[in-house]
Image 1: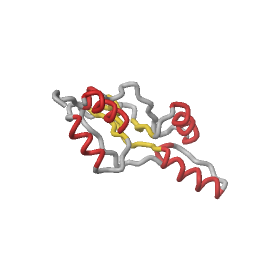
Image 2: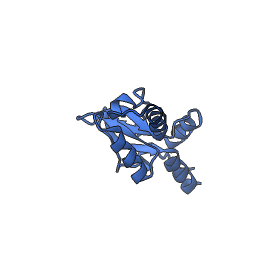
Image 3: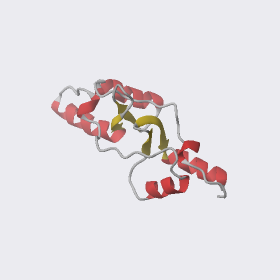
Image 4: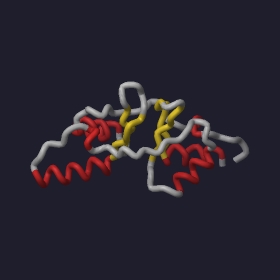
Length: 131
C-alpha cells in the first residue's frame, strides 16, 4: 500500500441507526431487512449512546421466548460501552484494531457526532483494492 488511506475512504455513510426508545422487535426487523449484523443507537442530537447487535438480539429473544415475555425498547438491550473511531484514522491502524478485538464494526464519530460506520468487510475490501 503506497497511499495513506483513512477510515473516511472506506466507511459507509448511509447508516441504519436506532433511537434508544425504538421497540426491539422493530430493530430486529430492520437488522434482518438490511442484512446487517448491528447498528449504532443515537440520541436526538446524533451522538452515539449504544450499539445493538444481532448477538444482543439473539440473547434477548432466547430469554423472552423461554419466559413468554415482551421485549421493550432498544435502550434496555443495547451495549452502552461503545468504541468509536475517527474518520482520519489510518486504515492500517483500523485493520490492527480489528485484529485485536472481536468487534465487527465501529461507529465513525467526528466532533461527537456519528458520520459513518466501518466494518471488517469495508476494511478488507479497501485493503484488497490497494494491494
